[in-house]
Image (cartoon, rainbow, N blue to C red; front, top):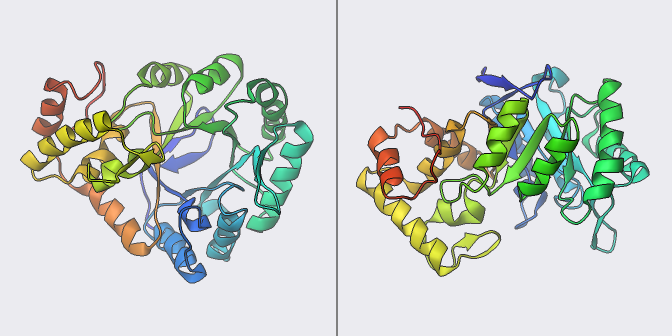
Length: 314
């Protein structure tokens, strides 16, 4: 497995690469995926230095975790970092339930370990507690913090599509990291205050949703997705302006979208899904594609990036 540059997770001894693999697609969350293709995708990522993998019981009702188990079989446990989540569960009848109680958090972790066929998980995230703040803070977090103090896990965080509640968690408990999806991207920089706060507290940020559900990957075409739905006109218009600048410098929009968020010093890693080795390879090539400084300067000059947004260094 090639060595990749790594950064620490918060103030812990854990380190992760700047680029990780999100495994919602591998759990058939969006479309069915053959088992062998899913396993091959994970192994290809590992082979090319992407040894940080994020999953959740929600992804395919445990299927993502089971496929990770198949992919990591035989790989020494200290050669990869694994993150999974608690709080969102898929019931046998297909219903998605939310439960952040102490007992359910412990049961969820035990079930994840069984599916993963592992004896430890590195990072545990409280999953989408948007309408469950108090129980997440008062029961889920202390449960995970106890496991951290015992050395059972190394880092505690939360994973959400909003930064405001993550900010409240950061102010009121000792979190190591947060997974934030879709709120710090080339299209949207609404979370600058939160990122600065986390940086001041040495809390790591993992970014998901860097393509804002697809529009920054596909471009502003009809049916392009934003926030898991069809993109509204003002988002299509802004994405079109971003693409026009990218075209000016012969840089694909998805390449700019992938590289942009890594410029923020609060961002430890970005998590991007893939459903094939070819997609993993394409993402790695996109990260290595040169982008002229003038492209970022034009976006800033045209008011497409929020004031104070760090720009990638060339």
